Length: 321
Image (cartoon, rainbow, N blue to C red):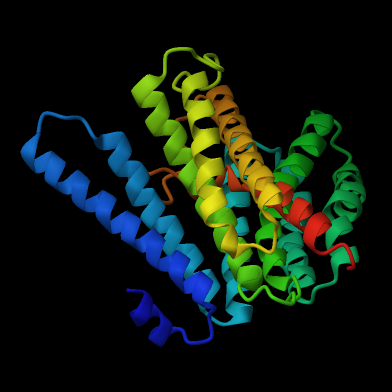
């Protein structure tokens, strides 16, 4: 598989090709095991694990496309992901009719944010949503002169934009990071490292929770989350991160630190979205992926892990920028 991918994408580094091969190999193996397990033990309920595996196929294929297709198309793909996530979030938060102008402005912020990432203008990129949009959106809301629930609309709109656009846009800026001497994987390697660890952390927490989980960690938010699952996922993700550290320019202690951080922030992103869904009385954010919920149900953890990972790597490996 590695040889085939190398021929198909000769411009990619050996490390990135190797990692893609490993991921596809794992997915094929897991899918085959699930298929034969269902045939041999039809009474076993494997629905949840099947759904997670299918979702992983979908997300990994999306990010592989974002990595391998041409540079501009990668940013467009990631921006569209933010668009879908923003649309799903605002659709369940029940904004007012008078919020439409501000919502339109928030949507227009998506291409601007990703353009700033594409042209590598870090100074403008990092303040556009947290500062510029933070000041502009409330002003647009006030112009409508509808003060009923305006405070709630201000808070919800800012938070939705930060979570679905600002957080996820760090995936794109990873692709804009400059090459480092001795580090051939570049931004694509970093993106692959982040996405793979975030997704594998979700699976590891689920498997450890199902196997050993007894002590609920947040029973009123996500009843299936346990301390055993969280700790097992943290340890497993950190170990896996250590072995795929070749996708980053980081030294071993920092690889371990960032891998553990991804596990913790991935858990945080998952339970935050679970709290929103429980508040709204819904199971999924949407039915964008039939049978598997919405896009944001699949990438909620990335909205937390992406900015945390980006800024830690940026601080450690790119201090000269």
